[in-house]
Image (cartoon, rainbow, N blue to C red; front, side, top):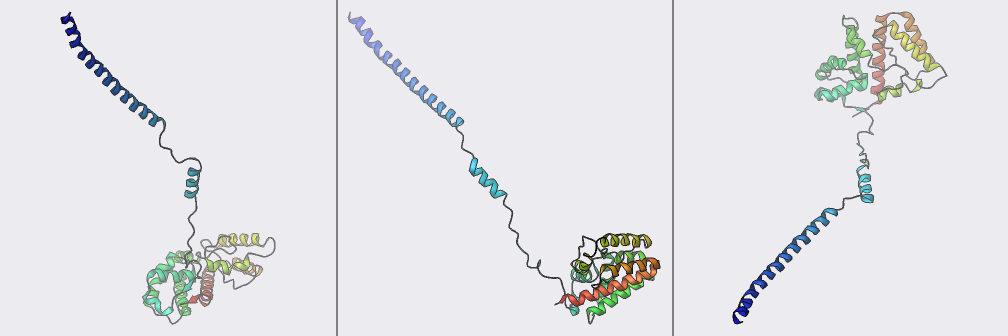
Amino acid sequence: MPSVFLKRRQSQPAAVHEAGDDIEGTTSGGGEKKQKNENEDNQRSPIRSPTGKEEEKKQQASNQPIPHQTNPDESMPPSLPSISSLPHAPDSQLTQVLDLLFEPSEILHSLSLPVLRSTTFPSYATLIVAVGTQLRALATSSDTQRLDTILCAHPRLGEKKVESEQSRAEQAGLQGGKEGEAEELARLNAEYEAVFPGLRYVVFVNGRPRPEIMQNMRERIARKDIQAERLEAIQAMCDIALDRASKLHHE
């Protein structure tokens, strides 16, 4: 009896130890399972992205137009620099002077910039006379194509899209008139350019009404003298430039 009881007493700690092992294992396994469940819950509930009204507000903000910042120079009318400053002015300013007076033309730039760089003119009128002399020299040379390109820098009379602010003002009186006059003016432009290939009808409008201008076109077409046309167009360009110089502000 005693020996049997002793054996049972000795076996109890082992049983307790084994039970403790089971408890510890159960506790550890439960912790891992709990952590796994939390991870799964986090995966099922991601961080909320901005949607609905927040997303709509963000989209509206991104679509808002950038407010226009007015450049002070945009509202200022074109002006001419002091005539005495031209010999010392950069080419960009000299080019602008020629464009304001005669309309933009790269050939005119190459022709007249050297004169503007090297000459001190007493007035814009004398500058315009000097450029006119250059143009007449081209008219009597064998290189009339360069002259024709310069003359064609002026827009056609009655054109709806006119880039130059000065030309738009000069042709303002030709935009109205009786019914059918606009079509007749367009027809005369086409006829003129067919009779004088490479040229464009240039005239100093000077406030004259459309019928008077169209009569002048018919007379010049009927004359059929291209050399006279070139000279008349040069004179018209110079008259226009003189009128512009008198109206543009001089700094």
